[in-house]
Structures are given as structure tokens and as C-alpha cells.
Length: 460
Image (tube, rainbow, N blue to C red):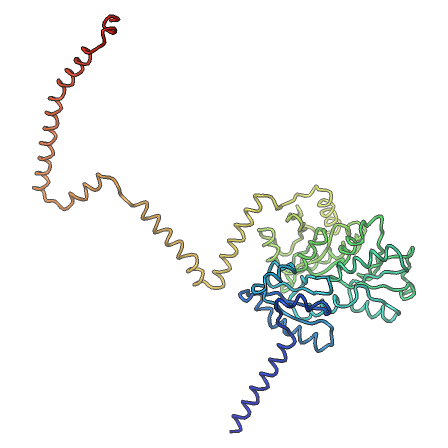
């Protein structure tokens, strides 16, 4: 009896915990549009059949629990975009899952990794003010320890401040924006003039130049990454939005070699010492393994090696000779910059056809690797049916002679002789009939000549 009570108690507690977790994530319907105005919402637009959506579901519950328990003003919800297609279309949902932060009339797309920590950090960043104040040196030092890249506006009211606020509202999905008085900075930070926009990163600081750096939005978008960083597939996608070319040392961190360490050091050196020359056009980093790169270029990159990617048009550049020194790497980068280095790939028509074929091949190979039996069924069965159809078409015999031959196969020798004699007699009869018809036809021709008109006779 005690065991039964214990099991019932455990069941009740589990149910309560499950309901509590579900309470942190609200199911939304078509009334959401009218009721959301006064709150900040983080919404997952999903499809019930989507595998990625199912994978995100437990993470999404953890996000709801974290934000609720931390006292965040952000409410977490989820909406079946297939059941409420009109509502999801209004919010610009084009794929599943789509994560959006809805704040007043603004909607921010989340494009980061689908992990609890990254999503929670995004929600807290976007939910707060676009520009946060740094009132003291202690606060500035604290933020410098927390963030690898820090944008700060310094000065009073000005047109530059208005631009900065607009850029912050636009790019808050990527990074934090702050404002401060010049007094909160260390004495080593000296600004040529005020107002100014400064970015702190890589152990240094850099000031926005309205004349040299074009628009503030473009400058912030290019400077929001460290000068050198570890690159993965997601980071490479984000770097594509900056318009920069990406110089990558492809290495194997699981099996580090002296050559890998040397190439990595060369890239780091160029990123730091040649910032003035290359920062506007290049991003530097390293990537562990070549699988992702191989899928991009539809080829094989050796490990370790150096490659430069242009993600805007899918071109890539490889050094013509091994890179052994900093000078050789700088020469290679300059060659890419001035157009003398040979470009491979691209997004032309031929490359697009190759991409379709490559993706199809990759899909088939991945299916066979993950489930050989399923692969044989999906691709082997249709190929077998098509082969049988082709065989049937090619071996079909429709000639009359072949039909006669099939008929004769079952006859004896005597029956074949009788059949041949009958055919010979039939041919003789047809020949006699033709001889009899010949004179009659000639007489008919004479009669026709004799029936000419009198005028024709006169002419003759």
C-alpha cells in the first residue's frame, strides 16, 4: 500500500512539474495580434511535422523557465504557423522554426544558435533599451569584461547621436550599444573630437570616421566581430552579411600539428598587424575541419591550408604556392584584393547546375550512410521498376515475320512441307491471274486513246 501511495505521489508531482513548465510557454492563437501590444513577446512559430521544430521544443521550454525565473519582462509563446497561417504571414514567417522578438511595433528575427543560453541572451538584450547608459568607470570596466566588442557613443545631443540610436534599434539583435561621458574611460583613451562613436575590441579602441567609413550602420556591421575569431558554419553565415571576404586557416584541432599552429599564428599576426590595410575588406579566423568548407566549394580542401571565401558570390581563392611566411600571406591577400589572384567557383549558371547535382549526391550519400536499408528502398525500388520497363520496351517484338515464326515453331516436318506446297500453288495462281489481266489493261488504254475529242484529233 505504501508503494502505491509513493508511486501516486510521484505521478502527481511529475504532472505538476510538467504543467508548471508548460505554463512558462504559452500556446498562442489568432487572438494574439490584439492582445500582444502591451507586452514584449518571444515567439516560436513552428510546424507540427517539422523535425527541427521538435528538436527545439525542449530548448524552448528551458528558455521559458529561465526567463520567468529570472524576472524578465519577456513572455515566451509558441504558435502553430500551419494552423494560423494568416497570422504567421503577417509576421513574415517563411520557414520553420522562426523565432521572433515582438516589441511594440517592431519585430526582430533571431538568427543565432538554437541553444538556451544564446536565445535567453538575445531576449534580454533586445527587450531592454536599444542604448544603455554607462554612468561610472566601474560599470564601464564591468561591461568590458563581459563583452568582447563594445560600442559606445560619447557626447551630447547631436545628429550623430540620432543616427547612433537608429543604428542601435536596427542592430540590437547582434550586439549591445552604450552611451557614456568621456570621464568613464581610462586615461589611455583619448578622442580627437566629440561627439564620437567608439568600438572597444581586441585590446584596443577604434573611432568612427564619418568621411572615411561611409554610413554608421555599415561601419557598425563590419566592426561587430573581433579581428580574429574561431569560425563555424553559423559565424560564416553572419560574416557574409558584413560584405567582407573571409581569410581562414583550415586546421584540425583534434589532431594539432606544427603546420596547423604555424598557419593559425600567421593569420592572427596579419589580422592584428595589418588591420589598417585589410580591416575594411577582410575578416580573419580559423575553422576546425574542412567538412563545411568542402560543401561550400564542392571540392576538397587540404588540412591544414589557407583559403579566402567571398560569401556574397560563392567565389574562393587558394594560394598558388604554400604559405610559409607573413610576407607570402600578405602578398596572397593583396592579390585577392587587386584581382590578380585566380578566383574559383562563383554563382554562374554552370555553378548552379553543379550545386544542384552536388546537393543531390550529398543527400543520397547521407541517406545511405545513416540508413542503408532505407536508401536501398527509396532509390533502389524506383530504379528497379524503371529498368524492368526499359527491358520490356527493348525486347518487345512486333514484326509480322516474327509472329509467323512463332506460329511455325510448333509444326512437324510434314506439316511444314504441306504448308510450303500450298504457298507455292497460291503464288502460281496469282501469277496466272496477272497474265490474264495484262491484255485487258492494254485494250482499255487503246479505248481511252480512241475516245479523244475531235479537237484533239485535229491537233494531232
